[in-house]
Length: 411
Ligand SMILES: *Cc1c(COP(=O)(O)O)cnc(C)c1O
Image 1 (cartoon, rainbow, N blue to C red):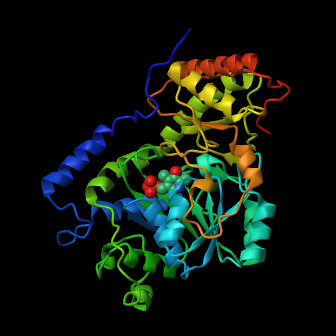
Image 2 (cartoon, protein in one colour; image 1 turned 90 degrees about the vertical axis):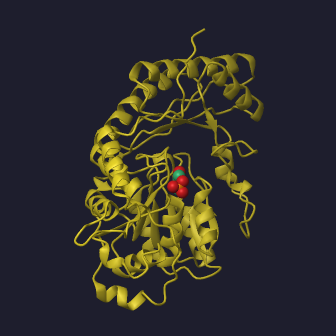
Image 3 (spheres, rainbow, N blue to C red; image 1 turned 60 degrees about the horizontal axis):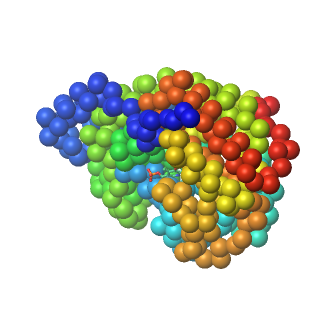
């Protein structure tokens, strides 16, 4: 029996040019973003203006993490204590955590079979809760029908904040992910599309939100050293009434990210190539279902999801274990017990008024997930796909699971 023996958490090395630049920054000793010589623009400020240009946003702020960016995005957009914030229930724990940190109350919204937010439930919960904000997580790169989402936002007067932790470099109907809402947040934590260990970005079209976010991030009165920010007059309005919540990015991280940003589109193409290899194999496997992805969703395949309809809890455990024994690390979003990075919405018990979400629970109950690190090649992905297919067959043979499920496709 074939096994796979590379690790699913091994990232590519930091590019040599980025290492060289990081060494220069260290030699200079000026690691703090505001520690600049006369006339010098810090690495962090340069990264911000390059990031803003990449996204196509007027303003960008680099900060300590993606979760931190989400937190100050909500505060800067005017969330008040106890205020409800709508959020899709299929996401990672830093998202409800950021809402909580900002003093808000997450109101979780159901997802559909396509793993995207259920727009009908969104409308219903917007009306019920009176929420002013939608924090939309493009979870695992799945981008919802943004026309439909924006329509619900318009009807209910919701401010849209996009969580683009998994969609940096992705597009929807040609528009860059992160340009649909008022604010967008990104992460450069090791397992995202750029790797600085920890790190995050916030982009926005709103001068007021940007000025508040910069002050929140811990700019002191040195915000004039940023490039991708609004005019001084906007800062004058907010500078004394915005608390310093210290969460800056430093020049060392910025130095290693600048080169990665230049390589990002190439990396996204590589991810999609690998995703394609996996997809071809997985679509051959009877009993395995892949979500249908519309043509205009130009996602980045840095991870892949599939479900195993009809599988019970026991079958799922056996499947995951079987894959693991053959070196294929599959995550299960439906597991009752949170494990590693993965937790189901009902494990976020600090949420006030946490309600049952039957549709989401059912979808997650057989939903599997796998990272696709760029240290894998096309042969690796074909082998992984083959192993997964065989493991599904092995479970199907031993159980009483009907194999009537049609595999999805791209529309
Ligand atoms: C990683 C992640 C975040 C938070 O990013 P950090 O930089 O780790 O704080 C937010 N949302 C999603 C969906 C993520 O995967």
